[in-house]
Length: 224
Image (cartoon, rainbow, N blue to C red; front, side):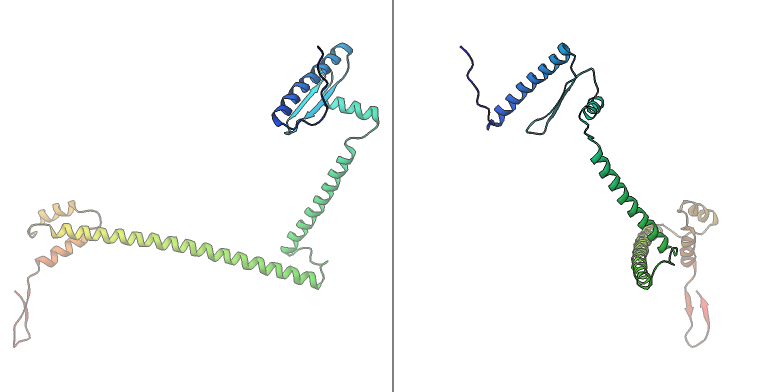
């Protein structure tokens, strides 16, 4: 029993369409390979599925560039001429833009000013003023940021210093007795942290001074 004739039209079901594409693509590639082997033909197939997936077949006896060169030579059609012309046009446009930018940079540095008229000079001056304003604003922002950062560091250091002073005073208040001998004084000074010996010596000196006695009716001030 022969196969029924298939109506050639777009397959609406996406899954069936993809399955049919894969089967027929493989069949085409198989036929292209047979032509290459049996007839020594140069065959190139390029295919894109409905999802944009690319597939190709090229006879092993020719490269892709060689195949297109052979096509151009046989048909007399230049495949790259229009593309090359667009590339040249784009290159000329970019070259002109680069030339203008270089001239503008030189003018902003004080060069190439002789060819400018009064309006162009005024426009350049306005651009320079705008640029200078932006630079100054950025400079002041950087200065303010750095100043705030240094102020924060100073506040942190002041807080650390205050905490160290409070800890030191608490330790000094906890010392028992009054230092009377030089040996005990020296040994005690050796136990204090760096920078605290002067404060400790001052407190010892204040503790060791006798109270001041004022005799009423006289001008004498004597130590008790």
